[in-house]
Length: 212
Image (tube, rainbow, N blue to C red):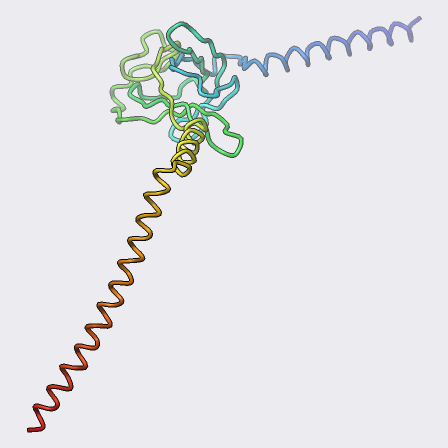
């Protein structure tokens, strides 16, 4: 009986440990953190531009968080981000862009400050109730972002270039320019030859005159 009780107890303990592990894994994947070690903000974009949940958020080129939620609306797209650590000071005056880079066009949210703030002006941290929202990004701040570099832009430019090169009028213009350049080169060569002949003639004349 005792052995059976031990086996059943061990099985129950393993089940509890498994549930705890999977519960913690789910919380980790959803970005849950204990102790308020981060803060959130919402950025409004006109277009998501390939952003996905989990995309990195960078400040001055350093990853400081990730995208937690993307919610489209009638006038734009609200992108909720989580920033770590909770005491990170990010100026309110920043350019916020959604950019794509790399061969797989991975999207990022880039925050670039447009001005510096004095240390004395920082009277509270992002999670504090009296956080100066007009100076720094506070918890639940609402910000305005814009679309930066995207693969769609490169594709659009490539299509335009392809259309331009296949345009008959442009092709004829380039052909005409090339023909005129070749003709001008021939004329320049002929002029150079004539000048060379003239130089020889003048030299001979001068030598004849110097002989008298």
